[in-house]
Structure formats: C-alpha cells, structure tokens
Image (cartoon, rainbow over all chains, first blue to last red; front, side, top):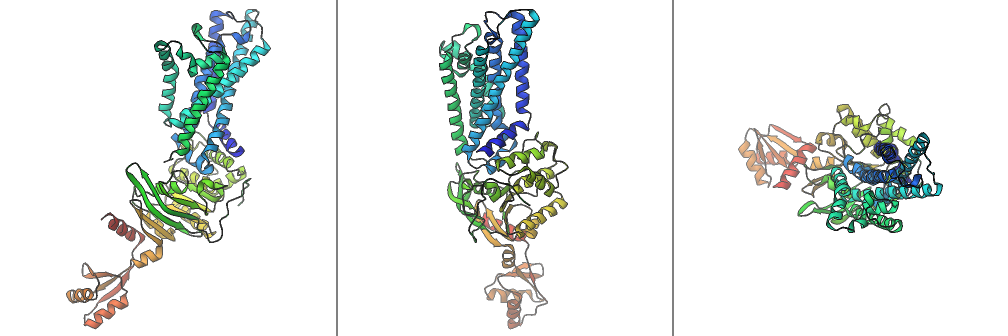
Length: 246
Length: 310
C-alpha cells in the first residue's frame, strides 16, 4: 500500500495541477483578506479566527480542493495514464485508497495554507492599522483544524465525482454548477433544506455563513460533510472497480 | 540489469505458458467484440497477434491485463490472473497506447511514478531510459516528445520491472525504419532470454520477420494459430507450367486437386512438387516448369481473414 501511496504522491508533486490550484487559493485568500479587512475591518470578530475573510477562504478551499479531487482521476483518464497506473497496481481498491490518502491530505494542506495566509494578512493589517485584535491561539487552532477538514472532505468528494464522471470538463463544469447554482436554487425552492447540502454543511463546520443564512452546527456539519464524502467515494469506487478501462 | 523490489516476483512452474487465454468472450451490449477466444503464449517465443481493425485484438489484450472484465472465459499470466499477481510489473510489461502519460510530466518522472508503484528503485529508471535511448530527453516534458519517442517511453515503462512477459499493442506505430529495426532487435533479445512476447501489429511484413508464432483473429474469433513457418509452409503452393494446360488441368482435377490458373501457370495446394511431377509424368503430360511458391505471412493473413469474412 505504501508503494501505491508513494506513487500517487509523486504524481501530485511532478505536475503543476496541485501547485496551480494552491496558488489560486492563496491569491483568492489574499484578495478576500485585503477586501474584507479594507471594507469592514475586523467587524464583530473577537479574534483573528472570527474574521469573515475565512468564510470566503473556506469557499475557495471547497471549490479548489473539489477540482483537485476531480482532476486526480480525470487527468489520468484524459491523458491515458490510468492504464499504466492499473497495470502497476491492478487492485483498484488500493488505487482508490491511495488517492484518498494523497488527495485528502493535500486538501487538508490547502485548508491550512488558507488559514496561515489569512492570519498573516490579519496580523499585518492589525499592526499596520494599530488596531487591537487578539490572535486567539486556541480558536485559531480550531479554525485551522476545521479548514483542514473542509479541504480534505471536499477533495474526497471531488475524487468520488471524478470516478463517477470521468470526463474532465463535464465533471468540473457539473461540480461548479452545483456549487454556485444548485444549492442557491434549493434555498429558493425549499427554504431551510439547503442547510443540509454539502456547501452549507461546510459553512456549518466553519460556523460562519454569508448574510446570516441558517446553517447547521459544526458537529452536524462535519457529520454531513463526511457522509457526502463517503457517499461520493463509495459510488465512485463501485463504478471504478467494476468498470472496464477501454 | 537489476531491479530492487520489496515484493517477491511471481514464479510460474516450469512449463507453464506465459499467457493462457481460455474461451475469452467480451460483449459490449449487443456487440460481441471477442468470441470464445483461446490461445497460449510460450516463453522464449515472440507471438504475433494479428487481425483486421476491429477484430478484437486490443480488447483481448486488455482482458489479459485485467483492464476489461471478460463476459465469459478467463486469462492468466504465468498461471495467475493478472489482478492476483503479487508483483505485476516484474511479471508483465505492457504498452497499450501511444500516449499513456501526463504531458506536463517529464519522461523520467513518468517512469519514477510507475517505479514507485512497483517498489522499483529509481536507478532502474535511468537504466531503462538508456535502453530506449531517451536519456538525453528524460528531463523534458513528455508531451513534447515525438511519436517515436512516446513509443520508446512506453517501452521503457514496460521494461521497468524487468518482466517475464511483454504485451505490446502496435508498438511499431510511429517508429521510423531504424526504430522498427531497433524494436525488432529488442524483442528478439528479450525472447532470446527465455521470456515471452505477445505483440499485436498490422505490419505483417515486420511480423513475418519477428514472430515465431502467430494468433490470427477475425471478428473476435481465432481463425488460425501456430508457428509462422508451419503456417506459411502449410499454405505453400506448387506452381506448374505445361505446354498442354488443358491436359494438365484434367490430370490434376482427376487426382482430386483444385488447380488455379494464373496466367500460363497453375497453382495447386495440398501437394508437393514430386507428387505433381509424378501425376503429370504418369499421364504423359509435359511439364516445363515446376516449383514451390511459399506464401508470406501477409498472404496467409489476407487469405484467412477473407475466408473468415465470407
């Protein structure tokens, strides 16, 4: 198993996909940090961990780790490298497990990186403005944990989506449409139900929502998000293990 | 040549065929791509896998390698289903597609990824890169490789585990004449070490020079298999010319043969020159030319596949 994990890790390290997505996340986090701090300052936040910039950063983590997960499968399908992958490791469940380990781990790093950059911006802004805003060590540690979990969960969801929809453009486009359109539509059609959907569950984990939208608590959010990740992986694995690679 | 691996290589008992396909059948909906196909590939031999486009060659190779699930039948490599091999890369090296790498990954990194999966030391990556003459280009992105370089990168990947069996799907595509000769020498060298090669190709003249055995399929079914020399020898014809063609034809038909007129000559299958000479002599028919024409693999292939499609 460790050989398969090492191989998957080398795949991530030897292309620009993960690096590019991480750069995008950091740019988004920087923009969100600068924008929210410049516009509203710390707002009602009691410490750095409560800054709204982390809500925007969490959306970035969700979207970009989702794409990371999708691409870890669809890149292989698109470029034909799935064949040598399966020739080297014919046990497809082992391939799935190794991908989960690497993609979820990388997703967690994305979450931590967003927190680190957001915190750096917040501290810099506090110093520059002469404002008083507590760093809140334990709250910040919990935030980091939550963002890492969000990154890992969305990456796993993406992995499952990639195994189910192997066409890269279709999988990414479908995922983005879901993230930016479908959950909002559900909120309009069946108000209240949307809080149980993955995007809102992710906000529930974080404990922040846009415009005071109703969200579930962190524990239920974590359970829901884990459940969605498990369901996506389960469906994807079933399709991947049984399917033909033609 | 050495490889470093954590997993013990799969060992087949002596005498076990390198590959065994038994009644392999694959249906995609209503379409039967492979239909009850059985054959064996023996160690120390190059086996050509021939068939027209769409005959089911690639599907068969993928079933052998566990990529496509057979609807019926089974396949084994070194006596073991591919999915159950403990160290698949030391058992089989395969090239199924011209491009099977991320275009933005360097050739060396592509091989390192596969070597890691097979617990193969990185030093072996440099060895196989040298074997396929890609050392200088190893650091470049593989997407910028020419078609021939891509084929050689695929072969390098197949050779990583120093396998017992090579399975190659149209490996000569994109190779220039020097490249084809290099490939032929490589595969002959490989088989010369007691290892097995199963290679599909549409380059029949090339296969005529390279293959020891052939499996010819059409519409998913085996139409002929065996050693190339036996196949071509069995298809040999006697060419006979006589100043009395009508008399000669009568004699041959009288002996139960089916002479085919080709200009001023007849060709006759199923007999040798001595038999035809004796028949003509016995009937008092003069013969001005008597020879054996040996068919090429291409002739045999075309004859078999045309017969199969009738």
